[in-house]
Structure formats: C-alpha cells, structure tokens
Length: 551
Image 1: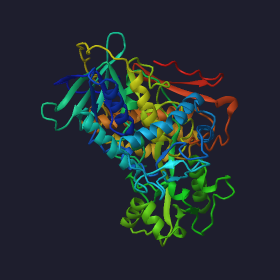
Image 2: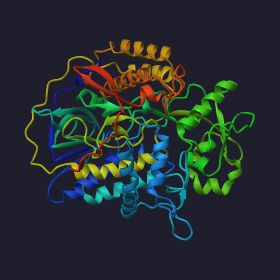
Image 3: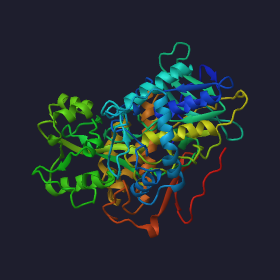
Image 4: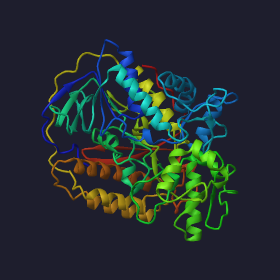
C-alpha cells in the first residue's frame, strides 16, 4: 500500500499560472523555455525546483550528449545502436524521433550559447562511449558537459524572464472534477510569503523531477533524486512502466566498504578514449565477453565487473588509463582527475578502483511521443518519464538528448488554454506518512536485494521487508518524512516489477533466470495505484506500436 496523498498542512498560499514545470535539469529548463517561446505574450510558465536551479543531475553529467553530427554518421546508425542497447524493448518510433530530431535540437542548444569542445579546425570534438559504434558524443569542458549545458540554459531562462520558485518540494497532483491535472501542491522553504505548503493552479503540469537513485545506498545521483515525480504520478493514478530497469553505471570511484550517498562517477568517455578495465592481476577481463570489450553497453560491462569481483573475491576492479598520459587527463578529464586526486588517487600514475553503482532509471512515468501521460493534462520528461527510447538499458549519453528533444515536443503539445479555474484542494490523507528513518532502511533493503544481481529469494525478502516498513507511519509532515514516503513507494514499485520479470534482460539481471526469454517476457510491466494499492500487469509486444498523432 502507498498513501493516496501525502499528509501535509492545508495550503497557505496559491499561485495561478498557465503551465507549471517541476524540475530544473535539462528536461525542465528546455520545456519551460520552449513553452515560454511558443507562448510569448499569450501565457505564463512557472518553473519550480526542489533545491537550487542547478542542483539536479544535469550539472553532474560528464560524458556528453549523443547525436549524429559527424560526417559519416547518421540517425539510422544512432537508431541501430540505441535499439541494440535496449534489448528488444525500445519503442522504435520513439527512438526514431529521438535520433532524427536530435541533431537539430543540439544545434539549437548551441545557438542558445552552449560552448561544446571543438577541434583545431572548429568542428565539434566528438568521442565514443559504450554501445556506440561511432564517435557521436559532443562534450564540453572535457568532462563538464552537464555543467555547461545547465549554465547556458539558466542564462537563457533568465533572459526569457521565466518565473522560478526554488527550494520547492512537489507533494501531490491536483485534479479537477473530470480527473484532469489542474496543478500541484508543494512545500517551499525560505521564499517569504511563499513559505510552507502552497498550491499552484495550472492548465498543464510537467514533471521533470529527475531520477530515483537515492532509493539505493550508493548512487551517482544527487541527494535530491528521491523519485518524487514517479511517486506523485503513482498516487495520482498515472501509469509507470519499466521500473525494474535501473541502470548501474559500471565505473564509479570505489571509496571503500560502507561508503554511501552520491558517489563520484568515472565517465564512460574515459573508456571511450582508451582506458581499460582490469582486475587486481592486471587482466583485461572484458576482452572476449563482448565484441566491444570495455565499450560494450553498460549492462554488459556492469555484469562483467560483478562477475569478475565474484570470481576473485575482490571488492572492486580497476580502470587503467595510465597510458593516456597526463596531457589527455588534464585536457579531456580535468574534473575526474581532480576528484580522484581529492581522494588520494592519481589516474596518471595508478589505476582507479571502480565498482558499479545505481545511476539511471530507464523506466518512469509512461508517456507517448509528445510527453503526455495517462492522466490528461499531466506531462513527463527526462529521467522521470518513460518515453520508450531506452528499453531495458539506456545507451550512453542518450539521456541529455531525450530531455532536449522531448522537452521541445511537450511545449508543442500543450494547448493554450484559459486561465486556471478556482480549485478546492482536497483534504489530506490521514495516514501513510512514514517516519524519516525509513529512508535508510529502504536504501539498505534495495542495495542488498535489488542491486545489480537479483534473485527470487532476495526479491521476496525485499518485498516483505518493505511491506513491514509501510507500517511505520504517523510522522509529522516534514521534508524528510515526505522523501522517505516517496522512496518507499518507488522502491515497492521497483521490487514488484523486478520480482515479476523472470528473465535477465538489459539492466535487470536475475541470477535464477540468467537467460533472455522473448517467448514470455518481450513486453513491458506497467504499474498503477488504485486506492493506494499497487498493481503490476504485463503488456506483451504482440504488435508494432503506432506513432502517436501530432497535437
């Protein structure tokens, strides 16, 4: 069971807008900018964000953004690599949209002021990452791509005059009498008159709240990534799908046993430039496991690392980039170099200890090709959404591109409507708000039983222990209790899907079902909540998915 609404004080203030966008990463900012541009003089857009504008996952993106921008590359080649990585579960029509609209979308990003790295002749400097057969990853500042994209988008947001509310945790969706999204409730800290719980009334709501990595003890995600958008959508009755496919980044700096919180990522681009994965004896164990060796799709590399760790009894493996030389490290990977040295490791002279850690949710709130969810008036974009482009395993550097392409599409899909109608905010749900300490229990359970390696016994234990945690209610409304409740809801949904899918596919690895099983599991697991009870059903891919009509 999950609560139907989060227990919270009655809203003390109300704001009316035409469109409210929740989240300020690339997905939220691009959507807000595109909505504002389309509605110049004819509508308002409000951007609300959980912490500061640049505190989400986008600024931490190192490798870059993938698009067919180089001579000799093509959207068809990008399509093929994406479909291969998705292991049969990508929506081919959505992927075609991504790869064909992607190059021009990146060029518009450059026109906004994004300064990507260039070659001496002025051409974009492109690199390779896992699963890509061509160099098509544009990057900035060597390994600071997300920070540069965020900088350019925030400057454009300021110039466009888009109103922002920071330190705003979204709580629940407001629905009108017809079941259409009509706004949100949220909690704001330190905004003067907009302090405490309030309500935003709007004709359209866009969820771009980022990922859910904090459901695990060790993750590359920032502290704010507590699955708030997915949990809100579940409570509102929206369909979520593919939640079992949580991607673990293969190469995260190993900080020792028991290290938790946000872990330093060692970009896949380091392997793209020629670094090798080795075990303690120096053997390149990915050679022979896949024709791309260290540049295989992320699920393959993560499984290869875990297998070698299990075979050797080691706590980590190593990424050896010593042969790249100091100039390459200093030019291409200055951020990673500095972070490693902060932890007493010099990649120029020694291999980097690495392990997989929770990184990206390929699933999320189910949308069509225009970002529309199963709840009218509710849209989702970026990691919060499941557009179908990632399938069972996201291809490296497709995430920034997804937020860019589908953010623009959402802006085209949202109809220009009248001012929001007055709306009564429903009463609180009296139960279900979990104690803040549940957060650490959820993370322990998920890390122990629902990590890279899964099996029926562990998933059954996780389901049972999460159910027991659901009884630890009665907390007073506060940010920590709301986040714990969201994490618990998302974890429960992930476990339900992971337990149901009895096969190994993409980033879902069942030790007790080690093979891919297209006869039984070629399809999607869709989860909904009705009256607080989660149900998960299987939808087979028995026919091609038709392209959604244009709005």
